[in-house]
Length: 239
Image (cartoon, rainbow, N blue to C red; front, top):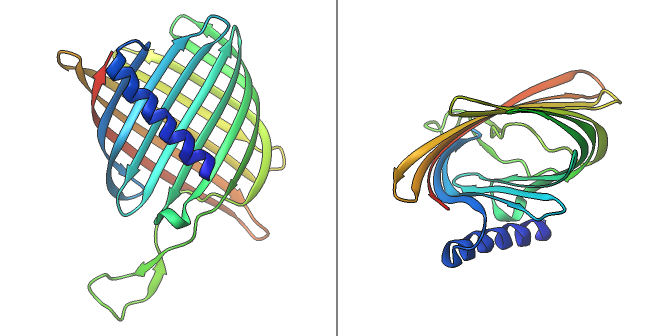
């Protein structure tokens, strides 16, 4: 957890230094309004891409805070047709109860024009966040106490599996999707994201992203399907 927070702070500082020095091959950094896990939040987001000769580095992160704190930090390095990526996510109602998850993936990448597909293996590790509760009827103090909706869960422990991902550009939209398959048939996950953006004034622009994550977890008695959606609208500084 401390490592994730340290890395997030480091990436934000890196984006800031890029703006000041104007020497990095970065995409953008900006402030955003988001609706995530049924909560309205505000925060920061950014993208960074650089060709380092031996490999291409790409970093994308966002941190949003409201009634719930949500964030992600995705780092990937592509060597020719081989990609190593680390996808990190956090979620929690308080800073002291945040859960986190890290997915490390090694995959082969195949590109045809604006279309890309990758197949690989992943390892996943994480810990859940503490459950929060609320009144089923906020206007009635005597109503039943129920678990607060928090989107998809983050189970304890480690697992591995097979990943299949694809991405493409359609007009002014970037569309990408990924499926994580568990060979033990315990936990499967899939997500699809759509993003677009445009210019505002000078180096400033706007961006909008929508993401849907579906997860299927099998326990001793049944299989539970949960879905989480999020949208982000932001103003960016592009360079």
